[in-house]
Length: 71
Image (cartoon, rainbow, N blue to C red; front, side):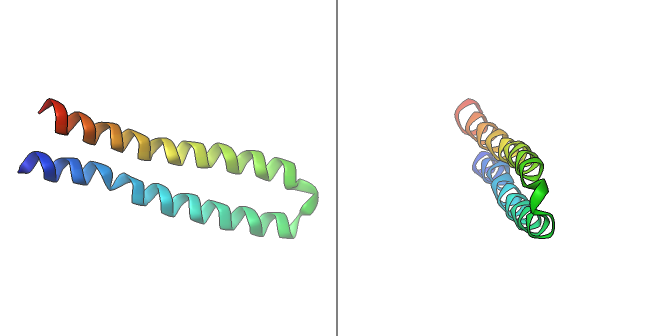
């Protein structure tokens, strides 16, 4: 029972990643609206930030799977 609870808590990292990506996308759209000439730089920073945020969700999923199958 406690293993399942631990795995569920590990999967909750996906919520943080989703919120972070949403906030970053909104801020990037605002920045592009204010400075259209910096669109290329803003987009590359956004993609890098989203990849890092998504990596935390993937790490949480892997930890949850390790908890479920190896404990």
